[in-house]
Length: 298
Image 1 (tube, rainbow, N blue to C red):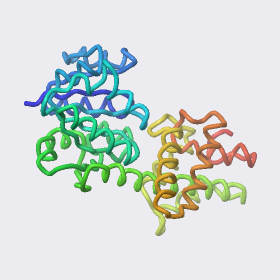
Image 2: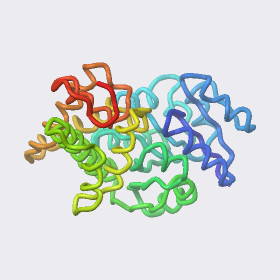
Image 3: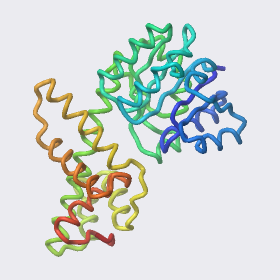
């Protein structure tokens, strides 16, 4: 059985690691905030003092960090992953980063003697806890086969997206759509509220028609309950929209709706809501228009 290393035990990384452990894989874990490793120590898992130690002890190293800069920081340096790699160690990059960042990381890992799979996940904390994330895997077929068991413990389906970099591209595609949808939903709810419409009636109409979506049902309930516990924070959604717009600019593809959504999320973050769930983007409309959507308070 492969020993699996986990670097990053945040809201997503911790339940992913727990599911891999429950599937029978021995773990070695690391997180900058040491307290996040305590539940794993209590389970009898190894807690490493550095990411270099994780890379040295694990057959498969899973990286779940926030952005391009964090990925580079984890890999580089005297105590980085690259310094601890042994020949054949597989780095399984599961963060949301740009295609350029994951391709550069893959090259660096291969130069250090390791192997690399680009496999971000689609989904939030609930699916991460249930092991039902959608895995956007990219890399050589033989390597995908080598980590199939680990990926299967984390999510289903496992979508073979192509070569390294294509997993990152697919993740930006789906999170672009996610950001556009939740931004439009919040905007529509603010419009309806300003028109004097009942929040419950608006939800009923949405859920009964062609625009029905689990996203609108779940986030609608959260907004009504003033529940903005961060399943997927505004700051991370803004980061992903920023990455998507930058990629589109390079490709010469206009993204006017996504650019507008990016600015809405940026404004909500500037208002102090960056650490709240992405549904809290509704607070931007509440604060600017001076209204209260659902049962939430502006």
